[in-house]
Length: 283
Image 1 (cartoon, rainbow, N blue to C red):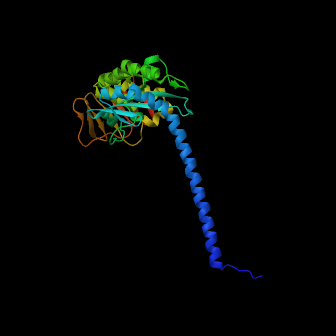
Image 2 (image 1 turned 45 degrees about the vertical axis):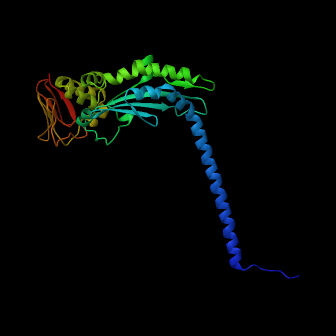
């Protein structure tokens, strides 16, 4: 009986074909698995998106907001009003929770606080002041829950009513710099200090600076840097000998603040000074 031995080249080609089939099969299963993951994600997201479509999106559109995904923006001069719907990371299937984040981004405050300028629309977490719709409506953090069999129309109606009664008024009121500065009074930060300065309340800006350092001594480096010098006077701020801000004139052309307020503070009117590594308050 005669036997036929396939040439080595044929055997090599056969091996490559077999390997190619396995590769195609592996890629198919990988694609199928990815499709399953996408299907699960879409299933998880669908109830929340349905609630949004039932009225929330139309309400925001009527107030001049433009939608992108689960974010809405409305320009207000160089400032922005921002709304974001945030789904819980623990959502699964048709069951899930979501909350609504609100924010107002004030460009002048951000610039004076030394934040990097944002090109385009800011994220909600970039906002100068932030709040949650649930906290405004219920007095505490609140997440809207969706379960299998939930009446999405009722959830949507409640969401729209809360946004109309609490969310929109909050956003509109914080367009005003005086109101925004007042709202930041008990939130010690560079943004809070900058807002007070921009409305012309220099003593309040100094008070907030002192309170920020006293409340968070471990974060003193955030407010105090070792290289530059800032002097707060009755009409302007000087840093390294250059004027960069005037509450009556706005920011001077070509001068923007450093990332943080710097190592030495002097306010002759309030007799408050910081020098070196430790703050010093003179009586």
